[in-house]
Image (cartoon, rainbow, N blue to C red; front, side):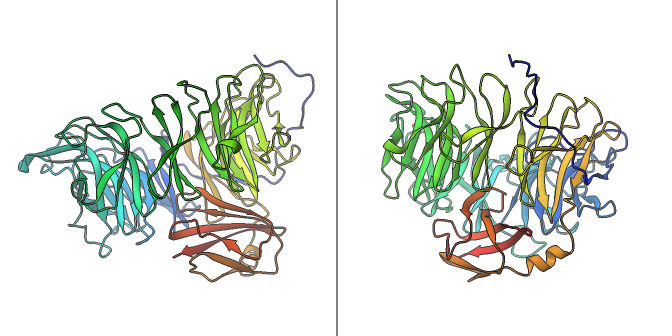
Length: 561
């Protein structure tokens, strides 16, 4: 239980120039925006998102941040909800692929199939129906985990065609991109039936490494693949093992499962967590030559540390784990057993349960409970001494900050200060600069801002102001103006495209530079100005580079060949 504090670490003030506003009351009779995960994406300066206007059901919408520029893009299913989700921007063709249930206007299986859009009504079409049953299916292929390898989409889906007596369950599938804006692909197909017959291997955790796509999948039947849930790899070519897809590593030898999760690449090694005999659930890695090693047995013997929440800051891996002695706390590693250590024992009497790890301005922000103040906002520079509570936002309870999103050189999130309910907050990295942006639902009730996303210098989010229901809102930083175009023009990258590195041509003073992939994930961060920004370790593709200067924030596109 959190102790009552007779003093406040900071004075909560509403930003004097708050610019929060309702974009559009999409559904005048109820909630307008979707609350399920992966319901929106930034695309060509607009927001693509799922919404329900109370007439057409949950469908695909688009917004430029204005009332007139917010509208139903296409009614994919004119009989029921299409529930678009899992949006993925394909780098090679610049279109967004997603899963949706169609019937009526777009003649597809009445359940979920792979869709594509170029941001126009006519360009929003079915890509391919992987579960083909002449519109009589009781379920679709349910594509999920959509990603890409080179010029192919990779995802999991149920591949079934009963007229040909084919049912392979939910397996890895692939799809080529559109040859033009209107013609669906006819050369897509099934990867490998890893779990024989109609049983599903349920592929997930797709991560590209060493030219292949690695993923977790189950193979518990069939003479060739009876290995349980293990790590697999594919080069995107269809066929049986040996012609494109093969077992990556059997971390738990035999038919038992190691259940690999949390896949990520660091310093040319593939890291993941797995349950291995003698180790428990710990961190393992695969080198470029395929060797499997344990990073460190954090919880000694066969006990499990259950490491998770991996993120990389300043060349170091940060994550949460339980060593069986200090409880669940933050750890750090540079890829060697000797450098894999407890960063800080935030709660000496129990678990601090750090969560929402987010890199901003060269520091790590997260929520944690020190056993006294409840779940509050913490920050770390990567050292024990530099790990501390940034703000006790709720002195009489816990604020539980979440949904961290960087926007114009500041960090935005939602939190509950115990007075205004769960609302939109911001921090510049200082205690006094951690403030309530606006009490959107006035009083103790919560507007509960969710799904924060930055599009074209606008921070979009979903919230309830108490009268409109859950709708699309926006926040525009009052420091942004037309002068930002002048600031934007003061920075260029050279070369762009680049193979391994680039330099900045600018007269601006750079505080930090962050590189994001097209999913919005931070993949590299630099502090201050550099003579050369090395990105040799990044995969080929399109990236968004955000620079913070004393005059404001700039975001530009960078192409890595």
